[in-house]
Length: 351
Image 1 (tube, rainbow, N blue to C red):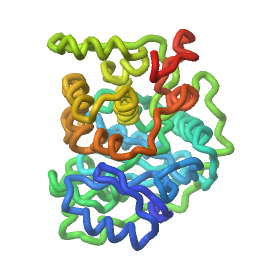
Image 2 (image 1 turned 180 degrees about the vertical axis):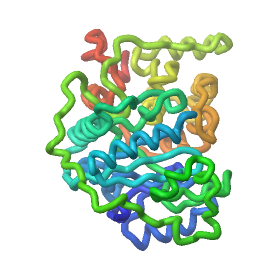
Image 3 (image 1 turned 45 degrees about the vertical axis):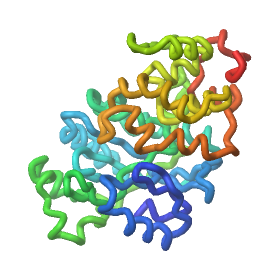
């Protein structure tokens, strides 16, 4: 069962483009695999324009990157085996992804996020696992309820490590981390895309999972923001301070708060500045000292490198004249606006 064979679906390096069908996906894969450092694919199919008004949930994913990643993977894998839930384990050249299959059900995007989060919480119930920071917690919280998440493309080459992302057999898992790290995928070509089901197991039914009732999950965060944590560099100019003073608290948080400055928040911050009349050069000059002080755990090192060189956010925002700053309802649904009542009803363009 290759879950990435339904289309249209996004492929990313990590800038996202849409593959409209199997032929398009194969061509894009062959053209980019080995040419870019890492190749990614969307967890769920999208519309031809990249939109996701409706989402068909057919897998639930878990990303494991912290230091004790092998033992975490084994714990979750064993738990899934005991539950008899169909799943795959992928070694992504430095960490693990686990994909749990569910019966395909289609939902509107907002409901799909909540269903996905409920599934993830349900799956790890009664284990010692929890979501948190990717490098200090068993499960990366970034994937929690995130239907737009991309994952390493199975069988793709990690150019930097010169290894392929591969699925693991039970024998691989039993042999331990040293064996997994040293699997020779260049000689064993067939195993790059080989799928292991761990037996004829049972797929979860999203409609049989109890919805979470203690918080609303939106995008990649829990919607429980109570205050902002601004970190303003001491060496910024008076012009920077003046622009910050123009911003509503939520927009300011997308610039200054590393926990709030997700890729989508950075895009909206750019869009906000464009709507206020700043040129692309002025926007980049303003954002750079903030984002380059926000470290990342991937190859891009900090948010500025990702913003400018990977996601190419400002290039995209200033090229697309059909993009407009969203309304307050959209921002709340995406978890980008605090539930602070003082924010409600404010204009996010004209303070």
